[in-house]
Structure formats: structure tokens, C-alpha cells
Length: 196
Image (cartoon, rainbow, N blue to C red; front, side, top):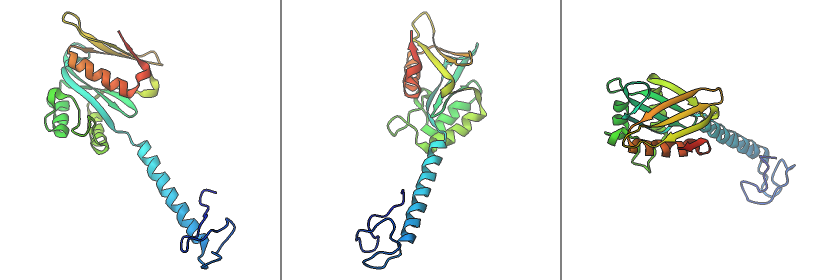
């Protein structure tokens, strides 16, 4: 039984599962069992809520990323999905980053706390990203992530392939952006990555 008592909470003497009262001090054990059950239910509820909550792990927004013809794009990773954001709109993602990072170097998200946003920052940033979202892909739907490093003459890319046959490509012009995307995808879904 999950809320079984082995010892009396008052005197510490051993008790049996069928005992309603402690044989040593007379403490009512049923009340103690109910308290234990309520405490475990609250813990379980908090744990489930924490697991349900989506938050941003990290991302990058840069003029060296492009989807389509114009440069300026952002790719963000949550604990559940990848979100693409058009960064061409003046101040959209750069403003978000500056607000969270105090002026992000190269617009790369990397928190002061070990390279990650806090959970609270990630939840807040997610609500802002939803407003400017260009695409989203859920982790379970992604079957392949192809990364190609840019060279002096050719652009690199990141291509997401889904189990539905969809393919989304973001061109990568900078090596720093490529490295950050590779790190993010290794954290997000390493088993789906192919580097060419």
C-alpha cells in the first residue's frame, strides 16, 4: 500500500498495516495515513504540472540565417518542439533576446546560468515566440535533421524532415550560427541528426 505506515509518527514504535491506533501511545494512525496520501497526491500533481509545462531551452536569431529570400531568421528549441521565427520584423526577436539576455551577443540565447535559460524565462519567452511564429515542428514528428556547414563559397543549411513528408529548410551563412544550431539540435533530438 502506497501510504502504509511502518512506524508511529508520534512515538516511533513499529505498527502493523491493519492497526488503526498505535499500541504504544494510542495515536490514531488512520489520520496519519490520510495525511501521507494527500501529501503524495500534491507531489504527484506538482510533478505532472512541471512535466506538462512547455518552455524554451534555447535558440538563435541572426541575420546569418534565412528562410526564403530575405535574411534574418530565428530557430528556437523547446522541450517539445522547434519553432521558426521571422526576425526581419524590426526588433521582434532581437528585442526579445535583449530583454532576456541584457543585449545578447550575436543574438544567440545563452543564459548566464550555465548556457541555459531558467524555466521561468523559457516559459515567458515561449509566449512571445508564439506571436511571431513562422513554423513549428513537434519532436515526435521529426524524423530527420540535416545540417550542412557553410563554407566560403557555399551556404550551409538545416533541414527538418517530418514523418508526414514535410521538409523545412533554413539557410545558414555563418559558422557561429551553424555551431549553435548543431549544439541545439544535439540537445533537442540527437538521434535524428545527420551532418553532411
